[in-house]
Image 1 (cartoon, rainbow, N blue to C red):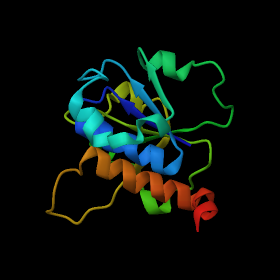
Image 2: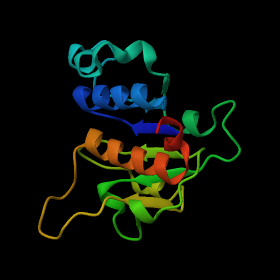
Image 3: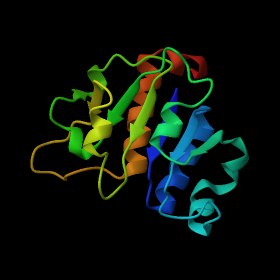
Amino acid sequence: MRIVLFEPEIPPNTGNVARLCAATGTELHLIEPLGFKLENRYLKRAGLDYWPNVRLFTWPDWRAFAQRPGRPAAERWVMTSAKSRHGSAPVQHFAFQPEDSLIFGPETRGLPPEMLDASPHHVRIPMREGGVRSLNLSTSAGIVLYMALAASGLLEQWT
């Protein structure tokens, strides 16, 4: 399983996701352009001293990630974006698999339509009506990742 952040914009969000990846042994893939430099102090602060435990990969664009060498044959792209709510499965009902890539869009724009069209696998985090439009990127990544780990049986190794 891996988390993919497409063109992330806010350093602390990416740093928090990096800490999540360190805690779970999940790969973190960043698709450029990034809204910050990897040396950003806020990014580093949010990730604390866990950065050495993060399996971090950066890609110049979506195509490079999609065509990367060694890509698992069983990989599915599971898209989540505030823009993909229509037709998306509630995250708790989705049948996650161990080789899934959990793909999140930029904080202010979400995933572009051509990316959403690249996969039939879309999930959403249910929220009550009249609440908020969306959750913070790092909060969303945490919810989706732990649901995915539990649903695919990968979480059992830690209980």
